[in-house]
Image 1 (tube, one colour):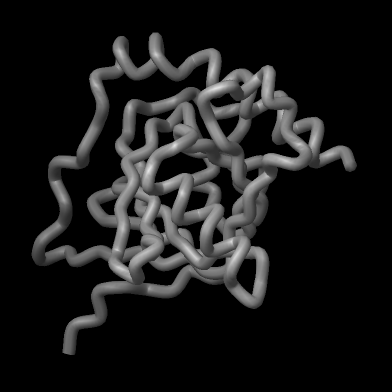
Image 2 (image 1 turned 180 degrees about the horizontal axis):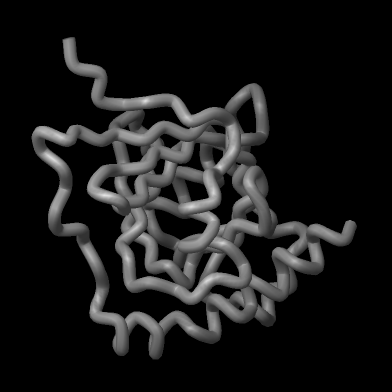
Length: 172
């Protein structure tokens, strides 16, 4: 019997904090956000490493463009679900496998300065479970990455604003 996914616990491991953490150097990794759209179908959103920041092993902040299907689905589910948090997951490819960071997101449009994010919506994500999917018989040898120069140029200011907001909300 093969066990592909191994549960790591309810905290983001140190190896991922080195990638997603607030003090880490950004790698041009494609980070997938998985959720259910407004019609109940699976939905995937590709995030740049500049659109997500983990302040610690539990608390993550991320942003998506306003008006996108991703933003509409996250806001829709937070408004009409019994709980204002939306179940979703991030997928990060690293170390020959895939990390699945499962948790719940909620929009922060009421506490975020719109002037800092005129074209993005910011969300808070609470980590609930982390798994690592790996097989030594078939490790992942190529991971999806963005063009580093272009993604940094486009998203660096977004990342700086996201980091500022996350650090200030943490103090509340």
